[in-house]
Length: 388
Image (cartoon, rainbow, N blue to C red; front, side, top):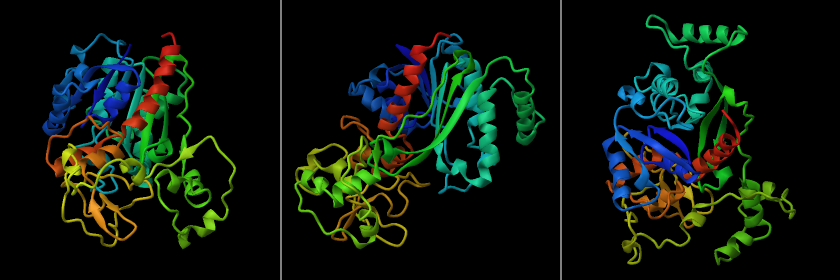
């Protein structure tokens, strides 16, 4: 089995997707105690494949990677690098933020020399104000052994990396890097969630790789809802009238088939879950009703028959009224932990033991398990086919 090391694991979304893709973790590293408690709780409950995870509650900036494995014994290094410096909802400090942990990710790569790299971060990293630093990150990943000097600023370091890349005298550890902004809804996740993924293969593999093609689309969902009616029939519902706002788009849709599947909606994700304030709902773990949900401008919740809006963590748990389901009759309520876990495609046997606010924070920071598995599976195929 191919091996991996996971940095900044959080509650384990990326790590679980990588495991499901067929990698065996040599180390799963996370400094946050509550997130580690979530992983440990699932290990105690013998939730596969977490029982085999070597969990380290540790600070990546101080972690002795030299003690893990011999160089080149790691096939994949995966990292959901903390997003706060680049988040649209954060303070936008970017490269000056003390939580910018890309340099420590480079240290892990230099020591472990993995055959491939998988990094996830927020869409905000691609905004124009961070464009230069984003290119700098990719250059650092391409040439991880060319380190930032003690008296050198990042812009001077970037210039030195650019000169090295164009010198024609490239040697040492190098990765071929590609990046793409992906929407999780395009890959069967019932959530509109745009995130940047950076993938690299060690240059000595000669690997040609591109991101997996989308498998789901909005156009197919709209056709099944408002042209064929298959969506409503699947849920045992009478087809409603087409909303006026969608008529111009729906009129252009055809009945022609496609290999893509429809985007999944909140209703698709919750279809077999009882309402959390009903007797049956009380019997389901992590499915407790959370009172106090209110709709107001900018925080109107996720319509039941669309993919959920991005599940967010916020600075103090749940921001405003964003993590809510919005029913057709105008009623809103907060997502339960179990519902949010489904939106992030965690399996139902994956338990979150903290408070609602803490569990929602962990879920908001997680990588959707299904999307992580799709990308990691494609990476695994390429590694397995190469001789290093």
